[in-house]
Image (cartoon, rainbow, N blue to C red; front, side):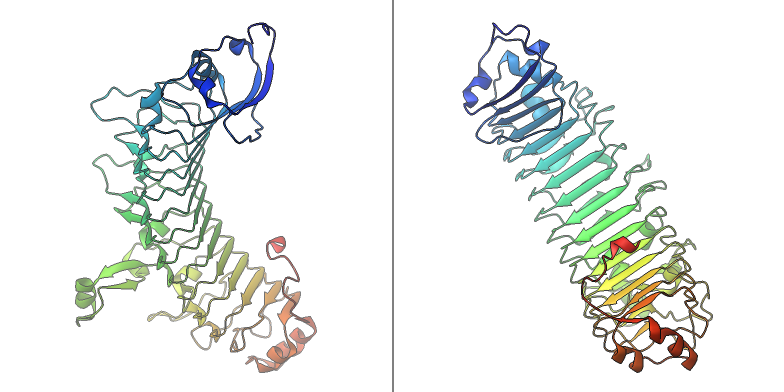
Length: 465
């Protein structure tokens, strides 16, 4: 390599990891582009300067240090003996933008900075971070996150970190925009917040949150109510395969999600409510004046908080294979869904009504769901009616498509003779049309030509939005 003094581009795969501990002279400082893989497997990269290393040793050669300081993307696999990346190598990673750490079984913290230590800026240019299969990871950060650290981090992915129980939102940088947590078998709460004397907005720039295959998850946010401004920019929230999750968020947290545009929930079999709180037995007894035998009860308490519309900017709501639901939301929540365009509820065996009637309901706002264009109700064998109340008709001013396949007991849609003036098609069956309890015979006559036999997958749901 010493003879290649003018070399500026290098793409190389070396299987022998012993070279990492050796001082190898070469034109390392002159390289403008490089992709270097050391270890058994080769992976490609789109970054101009990237390194992938398997079995990173405790002692590394000078040439490795030089490239670490210049690389844009770094992937470390099976870095044995590394409890904390910074303490192990004391490297600055000045230009690093993408970092992937996989199968480093001894790593307990990504960043460790005890309070008595002098804070330093770490990974100050890092934009994307992936932590994958760190089986002993206890927490994202030990001690307070050093000032200025991770100040440009936009995307964080955490996969298969089975000792991780929760994430402290104060550990994460305010710059974070996307967070995905998946296949963490012991995660009980996504965020755990105990509150501080100096409360400031948390995760204020987070736009996308995706939770997938978290078998022990019981709460997305646990502890004190997040300060004002927290999660203010969250637009996309998807939750899949979280079998123990009984409710999505608390009423207090729902009030923070004013910018939420898309909400998707799939295969959360025990979920009963979108908005709810766990109330202990003693509280239930005081509210009902009769002691119960259950240790906790799931309740929705929308009237116990100041009046704030829930999900006022929500445009897409998708619920699939969540069998604990008997209804989707209360009337007060439904009245706040002024921007909802696409509502899809599929294969929820327990769903009986979409909008539940509350005790003090008097008059339903005739402008409810004013922008709803697509209503997909599929595979809901217990569904009886869209709204639980009686004597109420919806205007459906923007409704264009109505899908109701495999909803054999769905008999009441609450449509009047002038409802749904923009309706283009109903996908169901002729038999369903005959069984529905129409409020007006002229409505049935108008709708009959719009009925199309439902064929599974006939139109992509998302293409209609």
